[in-house]
Structures are given as structure tokens and as C-alpha cells.
Amino acid sequence: MLSDKLEWCPLTDFTSAETLLKEGFGASGQLIKKFEFTKEWLAQKIAARSVVVLPMAFVNRSEIWPIYQGPAGQILTESDDFLALHKPSGIHTHPLNYEEAPNLVSWLVQAGRPEMGRVNQNGMDRGCLWRLDQDTSGLVLYAKNDKAYQHVRNNFAQTFRKKYYLAVVAGDPGEGNDVAHFLVPSGPKGQKMKVGTAGQRAVLSYQTLASVGGNSLVLVELKTGLRHQIRVQMAALGHPLLGDTFYGGAEAQRMYLHCWRYETQDQKWEDPHADLFGDIFDLNGLLQVIHNKLG
Image (tube, rainbow, N blue to C red; front, side, top):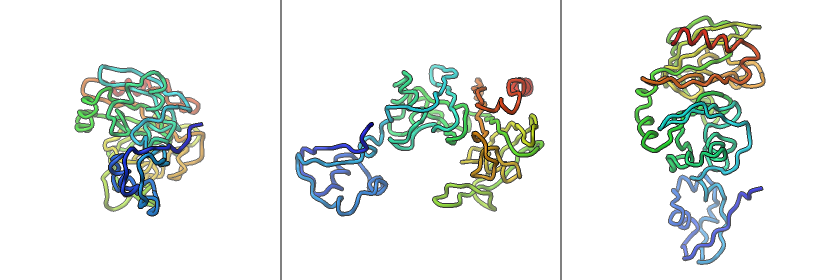
């Protein structure tokens, strides 16, 4: 088992531990506050060649956790600049800190693609071009180099013209064209989103593909890209996602939300591997119907 502490031996004196963190490790005051070092510890003088014990997550804060344990991802396809992956439900798209595992970036590194951990090295998202909630499965696109990453991140709305998700929801919502709500954070630390009279405008459209046993499979076209948007908007319409107990959905083996397809001007990226959806619906047949409609 890896230790969560590291011993560090500075070669020069520091007037305080806080100075060591700032000058020796390039840490900002905000970062130091995040790791909750005590005032007494930060104020102590640090002598040359003394042993300083630091959190491993602080020292390795820009690194990727080297060990992956969890359901395996899957490489769907790749081009010169991009790698398309299937993200299983229950893992992170990328880590938010060094110790956050399992995540797809750690899986890539361990699966023989260490170069993917060297893209955008100042960001824990590395080459990830969009983030999915932990319990959402589906398509994630990673840039294979810094140039492609920066271009897409700076031109995301212009690059990805259409974004489609599959969801299993309660009841039969029919079809909705350009359903719009204003979303605002709520709850402790803004962890939850809710519909309000002001805030960020969220827009989607959807169509019902099939209904079985009180639930429906819907194809959602996401026209904006806000946090928890599909989950919040479908719940606000009275049709929460199956398995999404955070927003009023019934308990299930997973949250039934899957990122299925993103389109650029000249390419379509898809992930047909919607885990457990096939236990409820004839997913292969329905995906063929969708293909016939969308082309």
C-alpha cells in the first residue's frame, strides 16, 4: 500500500514552512489553505537537511495516480489528434487531485498509453475535452497533444455541433423541442443544481424512443453543457432519471445516463456500449432506428 505522506529534506534554511511551500514547491496561498496546514506548522522555521513530512497529494499534485483499480475503459477509435474512449459508469473521467481514483486517465497510463498523461500537464484533466459525471457512462474524447487540446478548448461550441445522450427516465415524456430552464447551484457548497428564475440558461431537446414498465428510453440532444443539466431538467419536467436518487429518481443498479454521440463538422464520434441499458430495452434495434433518423 502506498503511503499518504512523503519525507522531504531541504538543502537550505527557510524562515518558515509556509515559505518552503511557496518557494520550494511553487504553492499559492490558496493551495496551502486547501491542504489545511495548521498555522503553527506553517510558522515554524525549517533548517537545512531537516526532515519535513508532507502530504503525498501535495507533493504530487500535478501527477497522475499510477495504479488503476476498477472497471476497464475501452478505446473506441482514434485519429492523429484524438482518442475516443468508453467510460464505464462509476469511475471519474479524470482526477481532480492526485489521490482520486479510479479515473480514465490512470486507466490509460496503466493500459499502455503513458503519453496521454503528458498532455496538458498543468491540468489534472490532461487531454480530456469534456467531463461526465461519475455515474454517467459513455463517450469521452481526449486530445493526444497540447495543440489539439488548446484548439478545441478555445473553440468548443464551434467544434462540437451536436451532442446526444441516452437516458432512461420515469414515465413517458413524449417529445420536447428546445426545453429551457435557468439553473442555479444549491445545497452545501453548491453540490446540487436546481431550476430557478435566473441563473445559467440550459437548453435541450428530447424524443422518446420506447417505453417499458413505467420507464422510457429517451434520446436527448444537449444544446448547452451545464453541470447535471440533463438530470436536473428531466427531473424538473417530472421524469427523473432511473437510478438518479440525487434528483428524485428511483433506485437502480446504476444511473441510466449515457453519452452516446458527439458530432463535428466532418466526423461523428459514438459509443454504443450503454452498460445495462440492454437489460431494459432492445438497445441495438433502437440505435439502428436512431441512425436511420440522424444519418
